[in-house]
Image (cartoon, protein in one colour):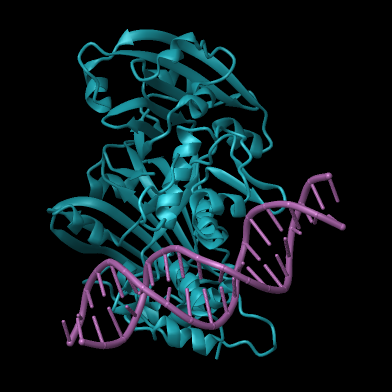
Length: 236
Length: 236
DNA sequence: AAGTGGTCTAGACCACAAT
DNA sequence: TTGTGGTCTAGACCACTTT
């Protein structure tokens, strides 16, 4: 079956892998009710603690559904999920072997326009720091960063000129850290993207929008527009 | 500090939350070297096992970096990561309260064109089942599914006509399950998208491409084109 | 009421990496 | 060599849900 044949100890990784095998190639089809942790631990020759960890992780991976008393069941349809690492743009560019360069395009303190007030949940008189900058890979424009920062929440930001490094690198250390909301979408290139990314009008642009929230109001909202052909890829 | 004041037992969740607090608001700034698990367990009044789980999870969340002997350190820049759940399209639509409808547009067995052979790593004579279908939400086209299935790997697929339900629902149970590769991108609307999603030419389309691999060859490749305005959102 | 998973504990050994 | 995290164990109590 899947048990150890030698005297080697069974690790939770071995158990996990065996369980996944049984679910995907083996006898445990969709909907199957698994034996209890105790029985499985006995069968695998490991402790219940180890079996628990294996089952918990397979469950987090989306293949199993666990409920007290009801037991552990193979999901009818595995939960599919994708995880993306989103490093600092500088790291992302340098990891491809390219040279990174940063350039500040615009920096201004303005009253938040109404669409932004709605989006960030700001009061009517709120002031924001608006920063537009560009990230290059090997001298070519790679990502356009369009950012708004809530000055009321982060007053120190006024003293940052962002001429040498982007707001991102400063923010990660200055932000009280909180809930982050991310969304991906395909948008037509706007005026800024046309100008700085060299897009033609209405070229599809891959956009990442990220908002960091502290309680009810956003600290910062950023819209990242990418050059033509950009894709986010991951393996599961 | 962060200890329990009453006689209540400390759970790993409490410990975890306290640790996150110390990192984000508290004394443990970027780069800080934490005390060892044993010392922390003593301070928090819990076992080392509990402390280990708390630290492990905070570490998986991207805030800490752990190395044997070197200890546990607060990352200079927290690893940002986003997790997306990607349910079956039917589930996704029904969860918004809308009515789901499926429609088959095209089903044909063809020799794989060269770009597809390259993309799926197929041999020159490979046959694929090409299925195009449409998923509706409340009667409106929501997602166009353009799928190729490697017949050599999944011969039974020939007997499926996919007239009532999409290939996806059949595949999740028939596939030997394996590594999945997902990518997101923004693409100009192609002819199919124009026709069935009602896009104008060159409308930006949010595309998800997903390939399931078994060893070296792909079992299936699918390209999902979404209606205008679609966005993928998540919280961290 | 009873059975399942969720978690905590104390103790142990090991693997890795810094010294 | 040594200190750290990685993991296993046996036993225990508890929380949730189904019966």
